[in-house]
Length: 409
Image (cartoon, rainbow, N blue to C red):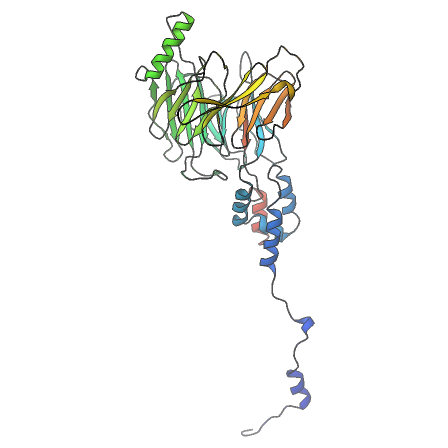
């Protein structure tokens, strides 16, 4: 009724004003703080064994959320710097044919299957990618860029150079990139070969952005250093004809320049892919050092390790274009030798980590230049080239990122 006042009983009013029990009060969420602490712990898991990261991702949803977070992945790569070694591509010396090389894992990372082909030649590993020359029945030879982490494969058109013998390099061209996570980004492929028709060295570069090769350039009499090199080789051999055979070994990439070697006289080819021009670099003394393997030094200068009298010498090319010996290591004191008459051979280098691969009659060894640590990584064999595959492998790749989305963590 109008004007009637309803009064509560004292007991009801008292109950409504009673404060809630502190024990039943909901505490503020602590997920951000817990995630920060968890991230600091997970950040210190070693990248050279990705199994630790994957096991951590299976512990609980919060850990999976942290490991699959893009911000954590960037911090993890920056914290550890140089990508770890995940596997090795072996290329053996054979008389006929090409045994299909396989990526031999050095960790438990579940890398994608090797590309399906009838024959293949491993040419280079760079910035998370592998460059292969594969032969498929009905199609013939073609270059393929393969990402063992993501499984992506891309076949390239022919470079327009009728090759007789060749080498190549694959790398990320992005200026200012730290090259810690180049998966899915643009890439370049430099192809240098001895032309099968005119028997001259030619080079070209492929761009993933334009999906096309540059016009091939030729190393000929227009290069004074090449003319001088050819004259010296002919004088030393007493012959009248010279074919500049490209050494089918891994090259070195420094900025806009890629470097390769010729078979005669430790000659080094320099190809500037940005300007599409080719030239030669004054080589070290060919009478003293033989079978050099190019590498990028810690100061981003061009260098090479070489073997002489069972010793490993490390040379670097300084600003004044002089070759300076940086270090010498007596191999007989660090590597076991079964046959004294079998000379060890440098078959590869791992850029950024200061590791040299040396093949002996006993096996394949790695030598860490900063510590002198020696490790046997494979059994003995006629290794012509060893290509180290280096990349970060984190749980954001593959099934763990899908699991994180499905569980809505």
